[in-house]
Amino acid sequence: MKPNYKTQDKRKQRRLMVALSVLTVSAMSTQRQAWGATLACTPIDFGTFAPCPTTAGTVTVSPAGTTTPAPGCLTQLGAGKRAQCLLTGETGSIVITAASPVTLNSGGDSMTVNNFLFSADTPPIASVPTLSVTIGSSSPVLNFYVGATLNISAAQAGGSYTGTYTITTNNP
Image (cartoon, rainbow, N blue to C red; front, side, top):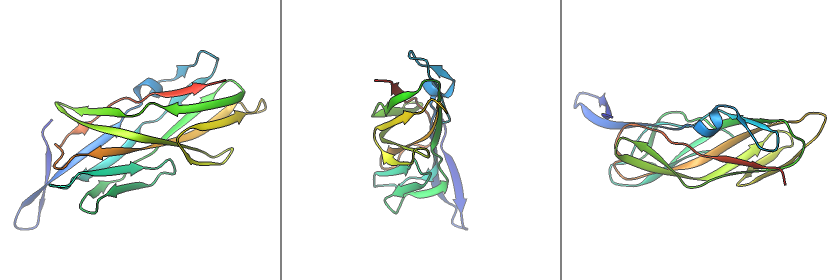
C-alpha cells in the first residue's frame, strides 16, 4: 500500500502515518471450543500514528483500554482500542492464553506484536499474561479484554498492517 502523507504548515513537511490493527480472524467469528464453550472477540486496534524517522518504538494497548506510544517521538494520531471477548458455555475452571509473538503484514513490510495481556470485570482481574478464572453455573459467561504491544522499526513503512492472533481457552 502507498503511505499516507499529511502536509504541515507552509513548508509542506510530510509526516508518514501508519494505520495498524490486529484482526482476530480466528476468534472474530464465533468459535466453538471442543469442550462446549463459544468464544467471540472484537479486534485489537493499535490506532494510527507517525513513526520516528530514526528510532524504533512501541505502541501498547492495555486490556484496560489505554494506548501508550513510546518513545516520545512516536506521535499518536488516532486512538487504539483493546479487544473485547465473550466466552459462553461451560462452567468451571478456565485458563486463557494467547500465542506470542504474532507478525502483522502490509505488502512486503511487517511488524511484530507480543506481550499479550488479559483482564476481566467479573471476577475483577487486572492485567495478567494468563487469565485463570472459574465460571459459575448460575451465569456461564465471561467477558474479558485483551491488550498487547506492537513493535515498530525506525521509519516503518506506511500502510494498514493486519494479522491474526490465537486465543486458547482450556478447561483443565
